[in-house]
Length: 395
Image (cartoon, rainbow, N blue to C red; front, top):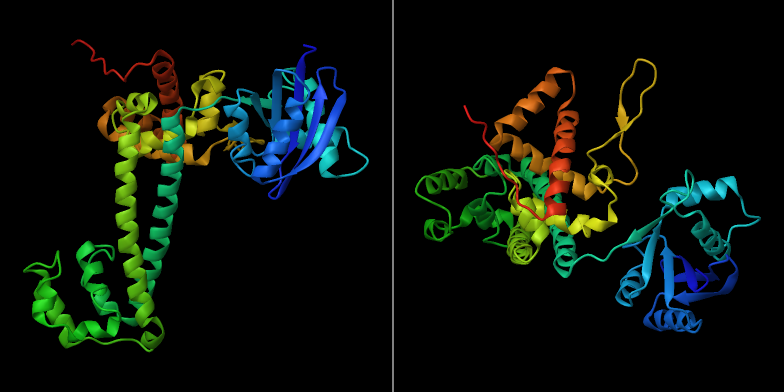
């Protein structure tokens, strides 16, 4: 115990405040480092100067502003803890400091080491971070990148629909969905929307996806094409948005292929993939966000992290729940999507969902109730490194 060195890092966007203490709680050293490579080298040099091997580092914002310092700490084999910001805030309220500075905050975080593991206040104040596998690290990055691009595509597509509806609704009426590939190719075959009515039939027929049924409709639109008053403003912008959507489609497809290749090397993703209805993207996202399973004490803590165990938030005759602050919203969204598809393939799961709906639960509540049961199955699968098995009852 005496040979333990405790390090607290108050994380900032440009610099970090560091406080070093021993197992007795005495302050040994404190300093500030810049969020640059030179600052990181200074951080490790001053800690190693103490000459101890059992080094434990606590920092707030793991995987946030702390990157890449947190990954470098794990790479050195030191124990890394993520500070529960809610517990830290409560601690500051109960034991207020005379002032508020980064140095004082780092010292208060150092004090939290004494509470770690003690009930009830100190429970889970510091959550030890277990390094995920290389495949999971890649899946986390790739799936987050994909989600950003899907959201960007949705925003641009909504804007494209609105602009077309405003300046040329008859053109939008040619298709049931503005993101049809042939429609986007037609819109983007010229730099301006107003040039489309002058396209020759041969040029239109050469557009990939335009067939014998679509060509006459396009020609009929060309003969009576009319544009709204704002076409002079939106003419080039509509084409630019359509090209951006095409580009995002291509980038998302390339990401899908990369995700599939990495997921094939990830055991967790392969186990989750065996569950009926769990698709390649959803399981890849869950594997990347869950990370190392040992960081969860039980299936209940995993259920909280996945957003399948809402806390009771009732008052009087009102029965309701609230989402815990520790929920990973990306995990929750991915798992909810997988559960809905799972219900379509497993009659027993659909029957359970229908029973919850009959009890008065809303759709999302019924899906989370089913998800809570599935988390128990997922926990055992991942713990025992087994695939999902369907056992049929004998007649």
